Length: 362
Image (cartoon, rainbow, N blue to C red; front, top):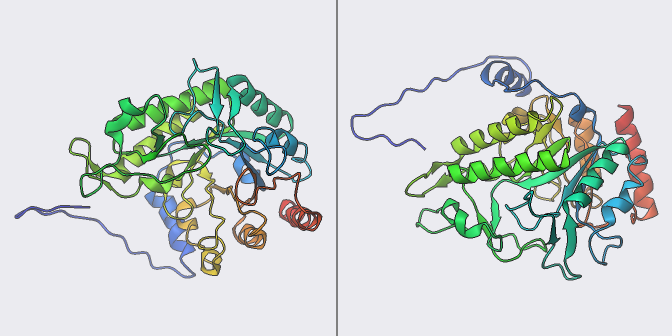
């Protein structure tokens, strides 16, 4: 948004590229001339063909949570899982971890009861994942803070303010929520500093190979806060760059993945994309997968490692995208289809293994 007062002017530069072929030629030119990377590319994300995502699932689909990850891990090799992400492990959204918090109750409002989590339990899963030959990743969210967090009152001023001057609800009401979820503003320096500190602790405590940052498309829009208000993208880009720098400070092969879900372009300042786009209105729509696939304009040559809560329901669409652009396929547990790898029906399992084998060979 640009506001011009009487007598003011603003000059913009625009470039016209004449080229043969389709829009991919223009996208290549943008990545070559119009965008500068802060860090060298990492090789291993491009080698991942299957991304496993766990929402603190249970041993059985309808039973208590907390054990599904360990059970599914036995099938990582069979399914050629290349990266596995732990989600739902935290005390509350936005307040994911603290070095002094050794034990807490995750999934506080789940129908089957909360799950006792510890720093050591998360770290043990990271270590076991790496031992299985799979890259371990940890989940964070870009803009949610749960009102039930002990930090909430001190962070209240960082809630996104709408055009009417009111704080903005986020609206997520899953089993990992204590009270109400609020949408925090990347325009707030306090929120940016807080998330960078959270990422620092996650890397220090668990040593994952990657952090998956959920719903980065929420860095689009405007904050009407009287002090730090303005376009969200400016602070959102700064936050992505700081988070990536924090992750990379722990090693040249440590990665930060955006979750644009083809509705944003924050992947430009990360190492790839891991958002859940597995819905009828996105991945399931034929235009979403019609070449040239529009999200490649932002993603370029970076890895596309989707989360897919409806992984079984929309499996053909996942495979179609993977074959067209080299994206990975997602397999999940604890939400959506909620079957994981262990409880898949035999016919679905056989089809998935067959398709994955062709993706690995290609």
